[in-house]
Structures are given as C-alpha cells and as structure tokens.
Length: 40
Image 1 (cartoon, rainbow, N blue to C red):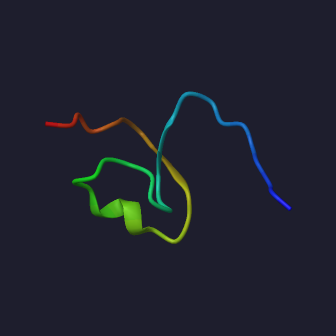
Image 2 (cartoon, rainbow, N blue to C red):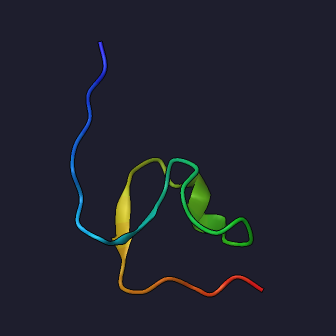
C-alpha cells in the first residue's frame, strides 16, 4: 500500500528532500521550510 498527501507550494525538507548541500536532508521527518536556500 502507498500513502500520499497534497502540500501547498512549500520547500519541503527531510527524508532526502531539500538541497544537496544541506544537512537537513537526513531528518527522520518531513518539514516545510520558511524559504528555499538558493543552490550555488
């Protein structure tokens, strides 16, 4: 079984989501950041 959910336009972090340079990709939960960090 799969479970999905809808989110508004938010920058999600955790569980492998986020910018590659950020350490918050390793969080054991999903969170919405206030703003995205520009990738360089």
